[in-house]
Image (cartoon, rainbow, N blue to C red; front, side):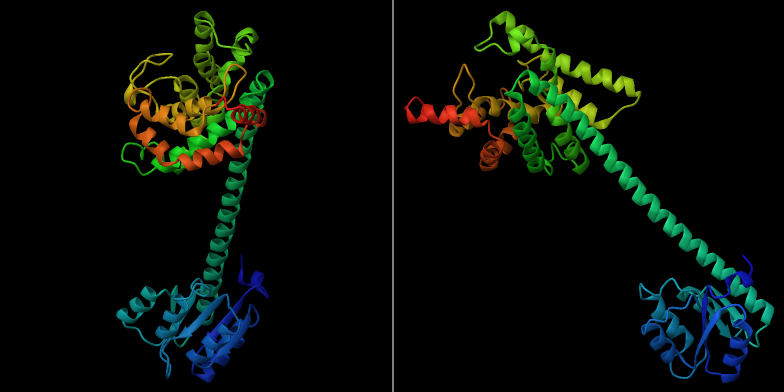
Length: 381
């Protein structure tokens, strides 16, 4: 862009204690820019503080009172003026003076007496550079906003996908919905509590905890593949039926894997969902299913869900059983420390009992609680 293209688009502040120099530069630049002038550094700073923010400053180095170096230092120390380009005007020709100015943040030097074509060209060049810099800043800000928007969209798609899948499970088993919401929040509470624990810190950073919360509702998604005669049986399962029920862990993992295969890429929250769906029935001592994994071979997310899932099953009233009081359920979990459950996860659960009870109340099965209340009133539990 030529200097003539910048008419009325840019402003120049000339700061020089010499009246002749101010007049010369003002007359030289007015055909191309809006020009203001200040007789010293203090006046220039007052003008800028009053709201006059020039696009570029021509600044004399040697002035009475505040030197050009001092003015430059002050402007570069303030966030609202640090990006204004400063070209020093000086009769000094010592290398150390030029170096000092550049170190302070000046973009260029023009020696006096000024050469008009040189001054005009250098101002135009630096204004172009500033315009390009501002454009890139705006572009980067736009790109950051766009990335944030697309990320929010993807997160929303993930959440909607999970809701759609879990809604299918709820449609087949109306006990599932509240169980899903409770276990999701139980797992989050455990993860937040253990995030700084040496054994878990590497697996429970902020991003992983967010993915854990997102994927937790899919832990029982495999139950969609269990026949109604077993899933909806109003009573305890026979050994043969229980073997079929146990397949929900593998069915869930495989269903999520097929979805991931269709995408043709590794999706972090689906990877965690697979681990949780497949491993939440494993037990610390290796007595669980489907693979009989033990100890740290069980994924962290599955170990957290194991405690959350069993606790919720214990306190929930079902057609074939009453819900345990919290204290009994907590005692059961504590007794299974190091047997069924990771000892440190159990310790976290015991420290979070009040929070677990609050979650159970907030996301309660209303009918289940009513049934349990009636049993309590009759003295049965």
